[in-house]
Image (cartoon, rainbow, N blue to C red):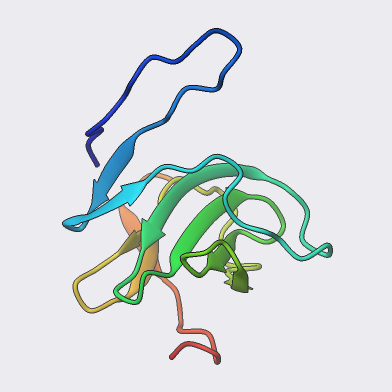
Length: 118
């Protein structure tokens, strides 16, 4: 991931966070992205990955470890409960498989595809 754009702003105005490149695609960083359903509480974010269909997989440090949004920020689904206890990273490989390194980063947890994956 590399920062492509960062411009200073006026005092009291949140700075533009810029743009990033993930797997060759450019994305604009957006504060407060994503609208969670009320039953899923807020949590600290560890990392973000984007799959081939532009779904944003957000790895969080919470009871619901991965939440997925479509490009406009609408919640799509969640997964990973009882699978991730020490969230450090998330990745999508060239086959669109999603996974996360486990604690020491010497092992890798590949997530089964949710039923509503299409």
